[in-house]
Image (tube, rainbow, N blue to C red):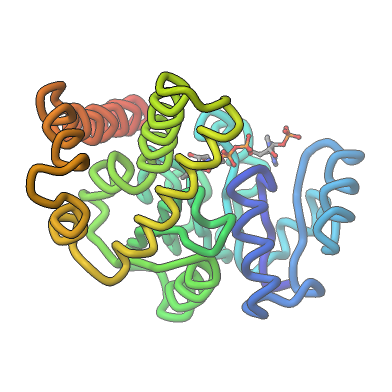
Amino acid sequence: MKLALVGAGKMGGAVLTGALRAGVLDAAEVGIYHPDEARRTALAAQYGVTPFTDDDIHAAERVLIAVKPQSFDEVAPLIAQRSAAYISLMAGVSAETIARRVGSARVVRAMPNLGARVGLSATALAHLPQAEGEDVAFAERLFCAVGTVYRIPERLFDAFTGLAGSGPAFAAVFAEALADGGVRVGFSREVAQGLAKQVLLASATLLGAESPGNLKDEVASAGGTAIAGVMALEQHGLRYAAMQAVEMAAKRAAELSRADER
Ligand SMILES: NC(=O)c1ccc[n+]([C@@H]2O[C@H](COP(=O)([O-])OP(=O)(O)OC[C@H]3O[C@@H](n4cnc5c(N)ncnc54)[C@H](OP(=O)(O)O)[C@@H]3O)[C@@H](O)[C@H]2O)c1
């Protein structure tokens, strides 16, 4: 068996779905582990893969750990084996900690974001020196199936979590605020929300081809409406708020990582 997935929730499920769809994984090569038998059977049926027992997990070549960090203490002894490679996407649990708890230093660490659901994750990737070339290449193929992979040093993972991991929540808050503005100027909630989403979708697509500054300058004509709105954003410190959001999220990720180094 090529891969055992431990934690087929929002993120584990998104990566599995993307990898199966892209043909990076064959359903026959994947198993899902869950300590609860009924749950593992249901999850395996949902994704069309094999339910894994305790014995199966000990025979897996590679294990993708996608449980919540707070579940890892309980999960680690159940999945530990010396000869497997581990790929973790848990926030705030270092590769060293994972290696210590599972008894194998073949550890690759990834930090995806919810863009994985639509094939647009920005995923950071780092690994311990003991990880084999094929382990790293396998992890890279897995996460390339759900977006773009950035190889960065592990010390930058908290910063990456602050911007890319948490960023979809910041963008969602901005979308909601734009919709509130729409309601304020007279649209129904439904119409305002549709307009806010469409604006962000179009802007994100345009930003694929030009810088944020250029896009703003293209929309904001002399003495016009957009520059009046931009002035209001500046007056109320939107840039400062966005920068602080990234910084606070990165700090929180670092705090959680430190709490885990016990
Ligand atoms: N969501 C994001 O945007 C995001 C971004 C980057 C990284 N991550 C990381 O992804 C990981 C999962 O987050 P999530 O948002 O996907 O959470 P989630 O939806 O709650 O998924 C966690 C899954 O783990 C399962 N689980 C719990 N205990 C287990 C055990 N002992 N063995 C096997 N499976 C077990 C849960 O199943 P039951 O519900 O049946 O117990 C659940 O399906 C976290 O470590 C998080 O840091 C998430």
